[in-house]
Amino acid sequence: MTNQNAGIIGMGHAFPSGILTNADLEKIVDTTDDWITTRTGIRQRHKAAENEYTSQFAVKAANQALERAGLKAEAIEIIVCATTTPDQIMPSTGALIQAQIGATNAAGMDIFAACSGFLYGLTMVESMIRTGQIKYALVIGAEVLTKYVDYTDRSTCVIFSDGAGAAVLAPVAEDKGILATKIRSDGRYEEQLYAPGGGTKLGTSHATINDGMHFFKMKGNELFKVAVRSMAEVSREVLEKAGYTVDDLKFVIPHQANQRITDAVAQKLGVSDEKVYSNIAEHGNTSSASIPIAIDECLQSGKIKEGDLVLLTAFGGGATWGSTLIRF
Ligand code: UT7
Image 1 (cartoon, rainbow, N blue to C red):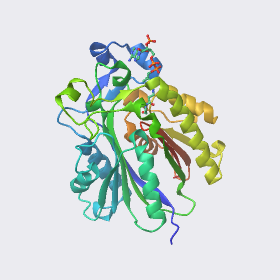
Image 2: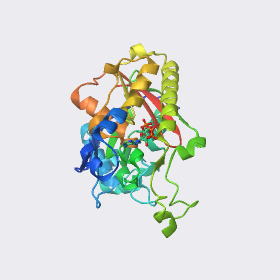
Image 3: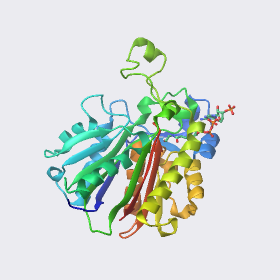
Image 4: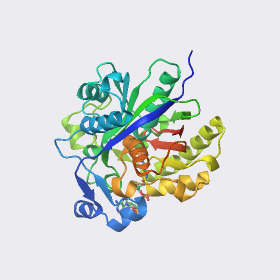
């Protein structure tokens, strides 16, 4: 069996053009710019139009990632789309992306792991490349969360946003790429962030729609504590597994859930604020898309350079969480 490191060789990201500022939200829900900025760090979020949907942003991000990797879509063997907001329940968004980008030799699929989905995808694909099962893969985080947000529920509608980020994964040199990765879940936290309606348990009906059961429901402050503890714990585990400490890190890219969560994770890990990436003020919480979007921004701005050791960490509904250590 081969033992080949897998790394990111191209990234891309995309957003809808619509923007919802804190001032816009002040007009439709009982909130203030001051509350949102202080409690979340968010100043604006992206919002898809009625006729826009998840795979459109995923395709833009994927095509950009392929171009930067210098690869044709036909070279891709697996497309993993991490999303909690698929275009439709069937077929998978991964399969729809496959058709739209012309990845005729790939298998497309979805991963449902909320905000940790991109790290779940990286972890799965890493092992397929490591063992020589495949050579090239696309891992995408793509969401249109604003279509699942109840704009009368002020504790959820202020944070969620829309967008997509994509990464092309390929075999890389022995000291590069994904050095360690770990994913976890605990379904006992189901009701801390969930959309109860529309599945086989509570199928779509006039009653479920009238009761808003298709919207995301979140006990944000309870989730907050679990998020901070879990991300810090799994980050330490991954660093230890690879034989590194936080001092070796160039950068930490956490899922952009809430600026206060990011600050608390950094403090728990003992990492200075300058080493922790944040774009939540401009982009809000894009769930599975937030980490690939952030990586791409860091690569494009030169914040991350070849050889840098970067820790990714995420937490989301499920609960799900994970960390991935990458040398670029
Ligand atoms: O993406 C991964 C999964 N999601 C997360 O990790 C989200 C984690 N949680 C959070 O980001 C935060 O918990 C929220 C931003 C959702 C809420 O912030 P918080 O500081 O935890 O507020 P809270 O829920 O404890 O509420 C405090 C107060 C309450 O009022 P009372 O009962 O003290 O009078 C809320 O009703 O703030 C009120 N409140 C608001 N006030 C103005 C909640 N949302 C708002 C709002 N504007 N938008």
